[in-house]
Length: 301
Picture 1 (cartoon, rainbow, N blue to C red):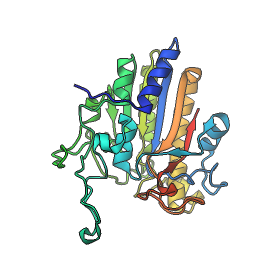
Picture 2: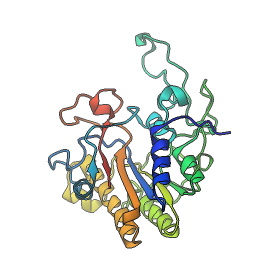
Picture 3: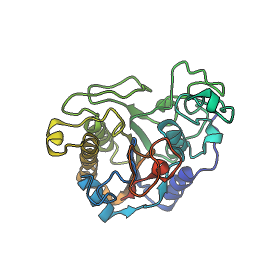
């Protein structure tokens, strides 16, 4: 039995579906470790993100968007379930007792290594409302054999409301629920184009009925990699990785336009937590609960 609790995401999804005679498609593009400052429109052009910059001009920019956690795993648990960490018990990546024990002022609370199968997700809610649901990319909410004190290793995407699930680093499909980050082929070293193309195929198959796409990229999380042509143009490795991620978003936007469904499709772009390095005028970065660690780029188109 699914545990359904109040959440912003689920309320938004249900409100949207009840307001429209024809349910709007929803495409959520979720970057990994892209900080608030790591876009062209918010870095005064330091980062080259022409696609996101165009989205920012044509859509709605949320300059004060915040994530619920400063690193990957709990942020994703919050996003998908709509619950804060004390509800789903995913407080950190893998465990909460990392670091020097002698400097810990409090006893770390037990950590779950992924969402419980009984936790309702946005995919569950949308599926119940008649949507076809697809997950493409990073999951990070399942660990086989997880033995966290609060209840184990979490559930797979197919157990959390997704009809279709696909993950890859650009070199073939991975086993469902796989973890880790590693380089893919030179033509797509972070898998951003493979994942985007798979999402495009899903949209084409389901263009005549409402769908939800959760496109969760591995970029620009380390190891930062980019195409050879991109590195010749952009010397900074991280900025080059962000450029490729940006280019992959264009595949999705072009497919939506090609299918003639842009007027009935909501596209949301955001990130899970802060990036590495200075985030504009903000203090902190990934892993820190200062502005630089939890304030994110966010666009709705």
